[in-house]
Length: 492
Image (tube, rainbow, N blue to C red; front, top):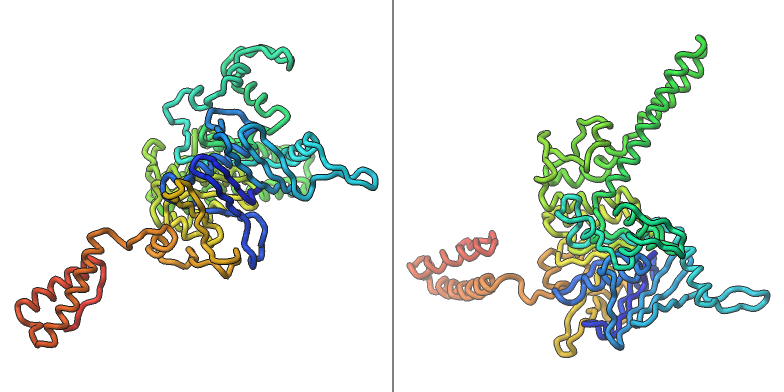
């Protein structure tokens, strides 16, 4: 699933905005949905609000938490155009009903005539396609929930009243038996939330779910790996105990075992292909000198320094957590058609990681659509100009608008700034719209330096450069050069 367009009318600070999320004319993928999007803008311009809206439109059938309640002001309307497999459709919310509109597949053949699909038929067709997708949405908020967060299970799940009722009462019309434990009630509630709509796992929201649960998938793969290994070893052992002379069967069993053992176990695969390349920049690595049985008992992946010293999980830095808890789930879940939302992923990440981590996310979510809301020019430098959505606040109309990055037609040749080719300071000035290249002290120093340059030239012409005033001005000139980070010195 991918989003092609978002239109908002009278929705709080969004008075009238239409955001095109397709490749521009002249691009080899012109008209297709963007694969990654960078949303920038001052605080309060609605970056996180956009992510929450996307989350609501995709997760509306999973009623978990007040986080999904969408309040539409009177006269407000929101529409999102999606593409899923061969379906191109639009969902519109005007505060009353969620309306479906289709593009291209709005009719069905009936003999020689074509009959327009009814709302129920269209909805059925849509959800048949939805059921074929493993992950529709994965949400990474600014704060990820951990098993080590000091929260009660009820607080983490934030059940709505309807789900609480399901968790503790008897549903006669569904023929359900009364629940006897809280855990059983939670599981029942989840099943009912997805009844006839979405399957568990299609919506993964780490604002209300534990990000470390993805570790259970790795553990399952490790158990399967270990089980297959024991099965093949047993086959070799049984062959040895058979009638002497059965060399061919023994060689075949040993070859199967050797071929299997050449495959890396899932734990090493997670470390080698995913975590270690990034953790090395923090002088960390995934701990390896543990056997598979010990790995199965771990609460989560274990780390150590490059020198081999263990780093207990409670001593992980926030940057380490940010890397492991966002990269590992994508590597493990392998989403291929999901809409992935990431809010301020740059938090606690050093610049050298910020400049490379976007490629890592894209690599592990091929075929998906990724949205990044950010304040970081380093993150923005990883995007093509048509992938940048800049939100700005108009103080006259008291509304947010999108500042276009191109002039005239939306064509690849008409974009003004290309973030991937700009210096960091140029990105801040030209894309993030900073009105000065440094602090007030820097501006004042530049003015003083200009004045000194003129004074020194005058003294030089008069032959007074080596006088006491001349030496004093020259010393100040060189000092300002040093403070400004310039290495140029006057030869005279």
